[in-house]
Image (cartoon, rainbow, N blue to C red; front, side, top):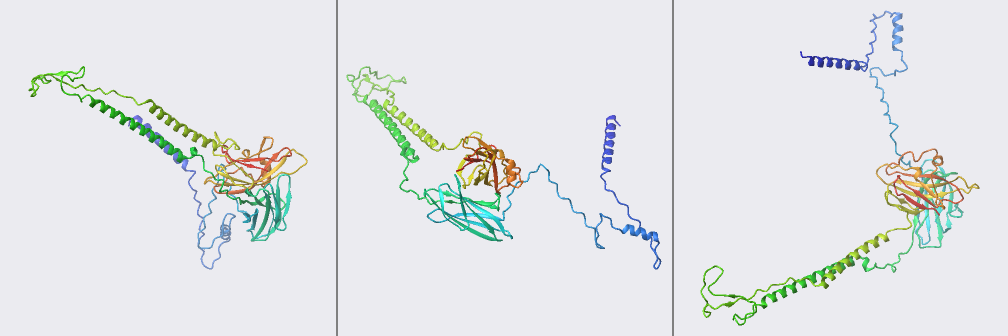
Length: 483
């Protein structure tokens, strides 16, 4: 046997032995069968030692389970699957037992109807707060409502005890100095004696008339139909002018070519410089017969008129160039005007590295960005004697509009102060307000909605003038103006 084959066979045997040694510890162990006691003749008492051995054999152990006679021992249940610590379970909003619905009243004056429903089997004590729009005042509220005013906001609150499986309806009628504008009034149900929200809802009352007389048409140079008609007219005029010039040129060339052949065939009428063709000579070298009456006399040959190539007139070229230039300038002006009119100077820049477009609104209006929908229902800042470290709590509703889970970060939620500075979410205070739950630690599940408090720690006596909320790091986000 060659040496190379011997080496290969020895290596194969060695590897095979290693595999057998590695598989031996994994083989199941076989428990020894218990010894079968010897048969005892009827009527004879079994020996005392055998009774003790049988009793020891049949005694149950802590790991055994009693099974009926004649049935197989059931297998132990499989352990639950282990979840890796790196797997993040998305947060999905748990349906609250107390829900709130707000609808605008169909009245000429602003009004709202708030329905608070308790779906649980136990009575629930709750506090319902409805924040009124700026510049409004209450004319009538459901008995039990208490109106509280501050320097910036007006709020109506009810202390309710909801029976099990019941619905309570509250009404609010308002008056405003500007009846033509839309008014949004959010309402929230909180736990009794606290600021933990059960649920929130909002509605917008709008009875502004549509001004038909103020609808005016756009200028002609800003209407696409008029611009297209003007360009078609310029094209037709240019094409007509070119066709007329080409036709006039051909007519003049034809008249010039036929005018030189109108003279007689005599020698005396030949124009100056005309050549002569003598009889008997031809281009083929043969002598054709002389025509009768000519007698071999030379006959004149009419000169061929050379048509000079004419250029289009200057006025036509200048007119066509002016028409094309006017069309280009008109199209550029229209495009630039539309782009300038679409710019909103009140919004912050949302181009560059930001994804999507920014949206600005007021409290109680749902605002959508790239992935999430934010609604600020309420913001409350305590009036403390100390101006350092005031905690302003904003009740915010977050809805995931995408079919995928979305993450959001506490550092990206900001409150802007009147001086131009801003502060991020106080995550420790926010976790305390949410009963120890980290609302930013887990992503939001697809299609889920959460209503939760966000806490911002600010310095000074002024409350934030604007909240900035966004989903991702590069999202343009939404901005909510705070009255």
